[in-house]
Structure formats: C-alpha cells, structure tokens
Length: 327
Image (tube, helix red, strand yellow):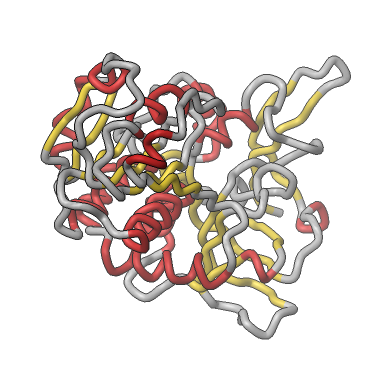
C-alpha cells in the first residue's frame, strides 16, 4: 500500500481531492515502476486539482505533471532497480497518473536518467518549469543572443525564476518583468540586473516597431505582452515563447519579423525528443546555480496540495514548490 492524492468526480460533476492509501494493482500500465520521492506544483496541476478537473481526462486521477525518484522494477533494459530517474511531460498528471503518489508506473521512453550533479529533490526544484526554461535558453543560444539585456516576462513564476537564474549565471544582463513590486528583491537575488514593471511593457505604444531594446526574450506570458515586446527587440533577436497565461491570441503584425528579422520560437516541453530532454537536464546540472535554486524553493506535502492547487491558479505562488510525497 502507498499514499496518493486522488482526485475524484461525483455524479454531479463536482471534483474533490484527498490523500488515500491504495495498492499497486491500481497503477496504470507501464514498463517501469518508480518509487517517487519528489514532485512539484505547476499551473497545470492547479487546473487538474481544481473544480471541474481542468485537464483531467479520466477519474479517479492522480495529478502531478512531473516527478523524480528511484526505479523499483523495470521491463526495459535501459533502467535497472536503484537507478535515479526524472520524468516531465507526456501528459503525465493529465491523461496518465502522475507524481502526487509514492509510486508511479510509466513508459520507459518518458523517463530520463538523473544527471550527475543533481539529486531527486533538486531535480524537482527545477521540475517541468525549469526544464522549459532551459529549453528556452538553449533555443535563444541556437539563434544567437544579441547585445543588450535579455528580457524575461513572468519572471517571478516558475519558468521565469529559473530562466532568470540560468541567464544571469551564463553572464547575460537580465531584465525581469513582474507585476508584483514586492518580488523585486527576490528577482535581484536570482541575478536580475533590471526590474521592469509589467505596466511598462503593456503601456508602450501600439506601433508595430519601437526602439531596439532587448537582445533576446523568454516570454512566459503571451497575449498582448508578447505582441508589444516583439516591436522592441533588436534586429535579428529571438523570443522564446513558453506560456499562454496572457491568452493564446497574438494581436501583432508581421512587421517585426520582416523589418527587424525577429525570430519567434515556440517552446513546448511536453513531447520533447529524448535527446533534447537529456541535453537540457545535463545543461541544468551544469549551468543552474544551486544556491540560487534554493532561494526559489518552498516545501509541501501531499496534504497541502488541495490548497496549493487553488493558490497557484490565483497567482499567489512564488518560485518553485517541491512536494515531498513521503512526508
């Protein structure tokens, strides 16, 4: 028997979440059984836990879109009992039972060996948000980061926090955009050299081109903010777009792309090829300063998750939340 956060839906469509003790016979099919040690809290998890279930496709359900732990059993020769592994993406926690349980069973292709230099707790302090941030940084590097500050929007959130820390550690000047002035000290501690109020971006003119300001951008917001900042990029600069919190629409023109050669790079961590995920995790172990990572981390237990699911949907969670599933 092991503990898991189970989300259930009644006949009237109302959902509820509670910690229950269940047996391994209830685990879904898969090649590898993992003794989960840590998971995280992300925006998608809030949707899965919250009223209506959000992204959940079947009930009962175990949310948690990522996890790290130790292999218990494996039908795949790539993984042996005792191996440390990490999983992000592949609709785990949405279509497939996820990380909010002390055991998980998944397909071997979804896993990545935990790289040297990271333990399972640190891996989940990074989590899906951190993996997405690193993929976004790598995309900027592949297209060439121009001189000048690199803009990070939604900087106080999970993706933005890790992106700020990585870029600063790589020697870039980072302009961190936030709508919460009280997070300025936190962002400075991560390495941001400039704090930009969200209104400063949103209140710029609606001209398709403005002054060339930013040498690159990681945008975790989307919507109107993304449209505005495209016209502020330096010639040939790139924007790694990773979030839809501001909406899926893009009320922009083609002018920044034609006259400034701006590159818009879409980053989706869900179904990244194995090689990309492995490379990104290896870069995280090398280029993300762990002392700064610790400044982002809050600890939670399975019993904390129903409330945390609501808080993250309200934008009340700062940095990273690591869930210790065994406490």
